[in-house]
Length: 252
Image (cartoon, rainbow, N blue to C red):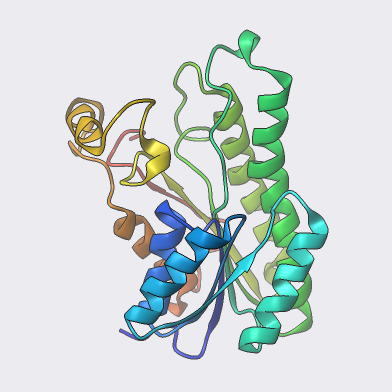
């Protein structure tokens, strides 16, 4: 399939995990991909994997907590590939585990600044370009924790992701009139580093998932990526403000 031939795609948090899988999936279907993140070495690895598969990609360092950095990221995407058709706001962190009353102010601020304000700032600059250039598509990566599911000791992360789900719907309503479709994907535990508990191996996670998830396993990163590509494709043209949960039935 080549659903995205001739399209320019920006993916934040593309140096590893779900972001890397999403970048690889878009490139495999013909897109020119900007892999963005804070660590150049891991971004270069992502670009190397894409180029080894005969795809087109570029690594651009950016910090989603800084407005100027994101403005520059959008500008660099346009310079390198002639526009910005699709943006996937995937960058996020998991910090501040513990009961609400014991979460440090530093952890709370870091999680909200990255996971919520970072998505808002990214959309702010992506939307500005898309409004001036005939529209586009945005997919935000939220989580099943938050709007769909709560568990103890992850209040900061859950709050941030519930906010991403709400922000996605609000932005979708505000900007569909500008030809910009905005949706979200909410993964649960997936085959990515963030879903590993401290000291846990992938094999440990797989064993835990047998009892935690109705499906009996975590989602593969490629399965989450497939959902993102669907929402970004013309086949999802009537989907506006959707929050698509991919969590092996955990929040069903």
